Image 1 (tube, rainbow, N blue to C red):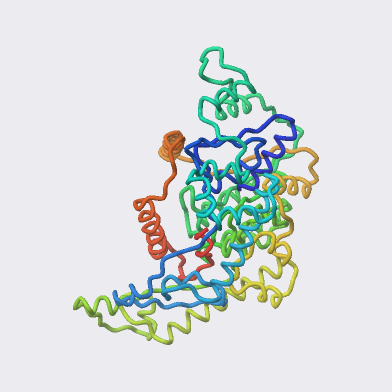
Image 2: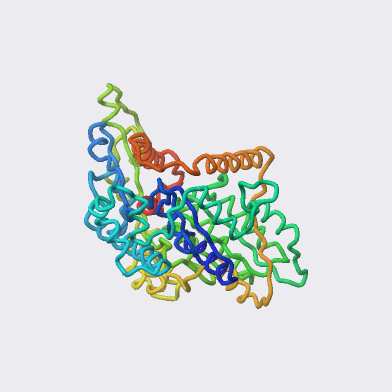
Amino acid sequence: KLNELGEALTRFKSSGKPVIATGSNFSQEQYYLASFADEIHLNPMGMVLLSGYGAYQPYFREAFDKLGINFHVFRVGDYKDAIEPFTRNDMSDASRQQTQSWLGDLWQAYTSQVESNRKLSPGALNNYISHMDDNLERVGGNVAKLAHQHSLVDHISTRPALLKHLQSLAGTNPEKENEYLHVDYQEYLFHQQLTLKSDKNNGKVGLIIAKGTIYDGEQPEGEIGSLTLSKLLQQARDDKQLDALVIRVDSPGGSAFASDVIRHEIELTSQSGMPVVISMGSLAASGGYWISANADQIWAAPTTITGSIGVFGLIPTFEKTLASLGINNDGVGTSPLADIYRLDRPMSEQAKRIIQLNVENIYQQFLDLVASGRDISATQVHSIAQGRVWTGAQAKELGLVDELGSLKDALDAAASLAGLEHYDTRPIERQLNFQEHLFKQLTQRAEQLQLRLNIGRHHQVTLESAVKQQLGMIAQKIGLLSTANDQAGVYLECLECRLF
């Protein structure tokens, strides 16, 4: 997403109007966008917080052993490491290898773009980070001065100095002498929407946003429900005014069953004669790729995280935990499989074999549908699958995506497939009820207020924030067990992709 915002800033700069980036501090993500500006102004008490990318997570094997919890793992693919936090105390060699690969590629893309934007020599950012302590000592610990010396920013500006500079560029607000002439972006967008006129002769390209983990059934905004998204796809298919459809996928995957329900709806839409183009966001992996595989075209950003073509099942049993508390389970059944999914009894070898065979079958289905959609053999797909994660740039070389580009590029491609010279974009969204609409508005207001409160605050990594981050990661992993709702307990999900 940052890539697309950067491209938008570049297009704006071509108008000849200057872009000024200002900040009390710049996080790594904020600085990436700031690097596209003509000028970067940093407060004398501020810093540019660059640290590189990392992917770390908690591992629970020892804790679960102490609690007497047995995790029964079923998977296909040496690189399908989503289950590792539940079965290991550390990262496996295969997981370390693949994570280092895609993480290194993303960091290379970041540093190359920023160094190009700032006209820095190759390796300048890595040098800045690697020798931070020595370089900082030379400037007496002044982090703002360090950023300026390394040409990461153009000016060290106090707020009064920055105001004076902006007034020289845009003029002084006649009603308030301590402000420069400006317009709030929300007000600007509101008036732009009022003045925009759609040509009735223009074609229509629909846009569906598919963001979040994939679950079965109806799901709220922020997650992907198989029934929820299917209804939107049916709505698009039945809309006689729509000429083409773009689906923006931003998902680590999820339920295998739900993913296939969605894929079938996308396939039906394409077969109806409506071109369907996938635009991958930051993340379109595992189940996110499953639902994308049979589209007419797939677009991704160079830094999209995708692939993870693999399958896993994860079923915990608590018989040892319960026994330690003096709780035992006994009974009878009409067959050896009567207790196959009971969590309070040991899992039989027959049950394990059945689930593993199902997982292997779904993996083969995954290979076949990718082979069909990408017009390559299943053997070729297997060689690049096995749960391995790829960046968008790597996926393009491997034939997993058609083109590299932005959402706008995907919309243009869909219009081209439909034979449209001019088109309007029509969002296709689930209609919110009154309570949902009110909650959304309140949430947006709260986020805006929080953003304003955070402006000017010095960003520090405190013990409290570090503890909250760690507890949040633990809650996310444990939460997987309580929210996962695949009917067979089989998942197409890239949990490691969430680390970044």
